[in-house]
Every structure is written in C-alpha cells, then in structure tokens.
Length: 200
Image (cartoon, rainbow, N blue to C red; front, side, top):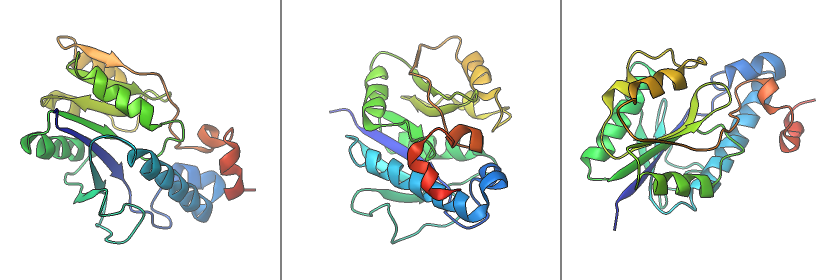
C-alpha cells in the first residue's frame, strides 16, 4: 500500500498576527475569529483523508488544540521564507519514506476531502499535482520526489507564484485540479454566508 502524507501549514491563531490583510477591513478580532473558523474547517476535512496527517505550526506547537494528537502529527515549520519552510517539510516526509506527499493551506472554505483524495490519485499518473488558487498562487501542491526548484526564487504571496512554478515543471508531468478561492482579503470572503457572523 502506498504511503501517503498530508501536510497542513498553519499559522498560530494569535490576535494581530494572522489574516493581516483581512484585518485591515474587518479588524484584528474578527480576522482572528474568521481564521479560527477556517482552521476548524481544514481540520474537519483533513480528518477524513486516508493519509498520515502532519500539522506544521508557524511559531510554536500547541499540545491541546483542534488538531488532535490522535489524528495529527505535530511539527514546527523551519526556514526563513515560505519556500524554504515548504521545502523542509516535504524533504522531511519524503525522507521518512512517504511515496506521495501533499501540502495544503488552511484558508479555504471551498476545499474538501474529495479534492485532496483526487490529488493523491493524480500522483499515480503524474510527477506533480497543483491546486490553482484564484489569486495566482496555489492551494495544494503534491509530489512523489523532491522538486527543489519549486521552492526557490518565488515572490511568495503574489499572483506570479503559480506561473513561475509551472515554468519550473516544463519537463515534468503535472496535473492541475479545479481552481479554488483562498481567503486573504475581504473581497475573497464577502460572498460566504457562513462568515458573515464574524463581521458587521
């Protein structure tokens, strides 16, 4: 049986330190509550995925939180920028012998376990799988062997990331999933009725 691992990158939910672009519109407290809601959604869908699950925290590991130690392995992100942190996470799990490794963020209400399972299936036929985000980045990245160039020379957080990533993969087989919307700004979230409880 193929050894599969799912990586979830998460920021520690602290007031004034998460969803800062969103906070400019709705305030720090509402932004924090929205992020906690998104984290819970991500935890709920990840529990249903048939893979080993790893949560990589941005600042410090929380022993008691929504990421139950019975279901999630807890790690700390390592590296000076997002690319290096993702590279180190992939490297650790690939070195552990996992044959398919996928990383997701924690700010997508549209993401579900079916999409993640589809991504693992796509890796049976492709070198890399990417879930494109509407903002020009990606919400999911998966691979079977290390593609180190994907984590270098990117303007993280900009609309150039996915294009630059695909340019690195011209000699590899790549599966693109459906586009999804990740939530970074008020424009990204205002059409979600479930989030209206967190702002006026």
